[in-house]
View 1 (cartoon, rainbow, N blue to C red):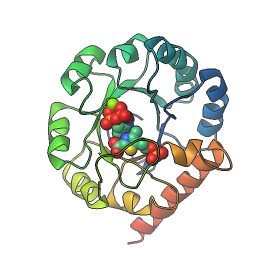
View 2 (cartoon, rainbow, N blue to C red; view 1 turned 60 degrees about the horizontal axis):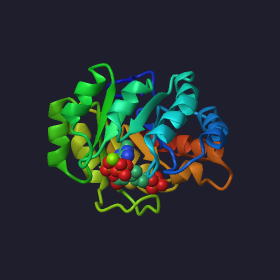
View 3 (tube, rainbow, N blue to C red; view 1 turned 180 degrees about the horizontal axis):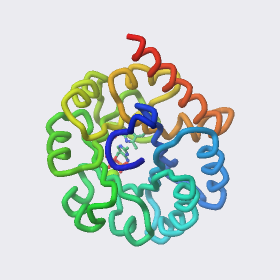
Length: 224
Ligand SMILES: Cc1ncc(COP(=O)(O)OP(=O)(O)O)c(N)n1
Ligand SMILES: Cc1nc(C(=O)O)sc1CCOP(=O)(O)O
Ligand SMILES: [Mg+2]
C-alpha cells in the first residue's frame, strides 16, 4: 500500500489482509507467504489480540520481511511505538487507541497511519482533515472475527470516495461472494480476515477468489 489512492497502474480496489487475532508466527509464516504469492495484495496488518508486547515483536520480526520483500506494506494494529521499533510501514489505530496525532508524532510523516471510523462520516472527516492515510469503515457484513458494534452501508463508501481523495478501506465479513457492492461503491481497499485465512482451500485460494471478484466487479462498474 503506497500512501494515497491506488494509481492508474494499480487496480482501483485492492486487498488488505488482516491476520487472525491469535497465531504462532513460525506456523503462520508459510501461510502468509502462500497468500502473498497467490495474487495482488496491497497490505498486511498484524492484528494480535491478548498477547504480550514481546510476542508482537517476535511476530513482527518473522512476518514483516515476508511482506516487505514482496513490496507489500506491513502495518501493525494498535501499537505505534512497537510499529516504529520493529520497522513496520505504519499503524492502524481505532477510536479507543492512541490518537491519530500521537501515532503520527511517534511514527513520523512517512509512515502509514490508518484510522477506524466505524459508520461515521464525522469521524472520517476528522481523520481525513488530521492527515490520516486511510479511513476504515465497517462492519459491512456480520463477522465472527470480532464483536462488531457498528454496521456500515455501501453508500458511505460512495459518499466518501466522491468527495475525498483520502483512500477508504471496507472491513467486516467481506467475502468473494459479497464484495461486489463495496467495490462498485468505491472502496479503495477490502480488508479481510476469515475470507482468506479461513478459506476451505487455503489462503492462496482465498486471495485468488477475492482478486477475481474484485476484477469482475471493477469490470462491471466500468461497463456501467
Ligand atoms: C483496516 C481496519 N479497520 C478497522 C479495524 C478495527 O480497529 P479497532 O476499532 O481499533 O479494533 P481492533 O482491530 O483493534 O479490535 C482494523 N483493525 N483494521
Ligand atoms: C478487525 C475488524 N474490525 C472491524 C470493524 O468493523 O471495525 S470488523 C473486523 C474483523 C474483520 O474480520 P472478517 O474479515 O473475518 O470479518
Ligand atoms: Mg484497535
